Image 1 (cartoon, rainbow, N blue to C red):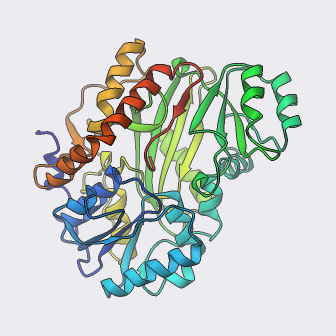
Image 2 (cartoon, rainbow, N blue to C red):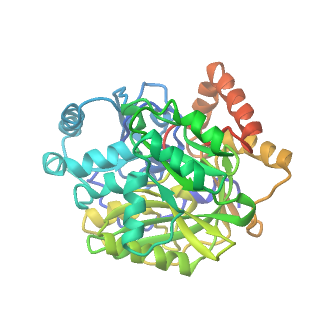
Amino acid sequence: MPLGGHVVRSGARLAVDRSVPGLIVKIGSYPLHHGGVGAIRTLGRLGVPMYAVTEDRWTPAAASRYLRGRFVWPTTGREDPERLVAGLLRIGRRIGRPTLLIPTDEEAAVLTAEHAEALAGSFLFPRPAPGLPRRLASKQGLHELCTAHGVPSPAAVFPGSYADIEAYAGRARFPVVAKNREAFVRRARPAVTGTTRIAGPQQLLDLARDWGPRPGVILQEYLPREHAEDWVVHGCFAADGAPLALFTGVKVRSWPPHAGMTACAHVADNPELAKMSARFIRRIGFTGIADLDWRFDRRDGRYKLLDFNPRMGAQFRLFENTAGVDVVRAQHLALTGRTVPEGAQRTGHRFVVENVDLPARWAYRRSGRRPPHVPAPAAGTELAWFAGDDPLPFLTMLARSAGPGARHLMQLRRAGRRAGAQAPIEQGEGPN
């Protein structure tokens, strides 16, 4: 099957309501976001009118043939929520009919949940408890939910002062991982850039001197990559927590190496992990689309939940069932009162993000380390950017990657060379 070719025909028989448009909503500047392009294509191919919030007129999403209209609205993530809600309502009035909201980042997902009453007249979206998406997006909030519901997660502490860090440095088993405690690091100066592996006590103490009197970090157990497998779970869940679509796969390569955004992933059936994820989501009362990152720790044989993104994941087009349903299509069907067809997840497929998988391949080969779990050769490949029926987003991505983007790529490659020691091991442009 040709690369990217199977997606044109998939879902052709789905009985979608074409009178209900979709709107891609993002907060902050990350123009090279393949997830938004994937959402525009997956509903646009079914005849659903698609709109998008874009940073400017020349983003890959804005170039898609399946986009009915774009709303150029640069945001930083530091705006008052009331201003963002007012902007969304203006967009809703311009579209002129109830529209499915499709957030591509945590800020947009949280904004929608916390201002649901104001947005409900113009938009369709799932209705979890208003504070739940913010709690799930927070490292501390997620850790607390895992503890409360018996879900394994890496051991973690949340220091409240430099003295707490000094005490932890004296008893911790290194290396450890430092992450920002809250998801919305654009609203304030982040303590760390992405996820940072810390080799020893002195390095921790040196870094912590810049974290201020109330460190906004989580210090977490490091799960060695040589003893771990990275798994992803994507699902769409009804108001009662029942899965409308549920998929499992393996992250084969990421960028920067061994952490960060997905560069290549494969579909892989994992009934145990699917059951764990569905049970957790039902217990916490989440509804809507979710993207979960799990790490299988070979040392104790347990899956540990690392991240819970309460929105569509950028690599969601890896997954589709035999009825042509992915999580975005499932959400549109469910919220427009249509039946979501059941089906097994398609097997043997992989997903490749062309612009980041190239440096990822180079870095993995240079390190000589391969992921412990590499599926059999894929039966078909879904490319994040290129599609024969919609080539302009790919060309726009290439054009935007030139010039300043090329310098950015060189910086990422240098980061990849350092990723085995003290450099940040998770970073990227925009949501994963």
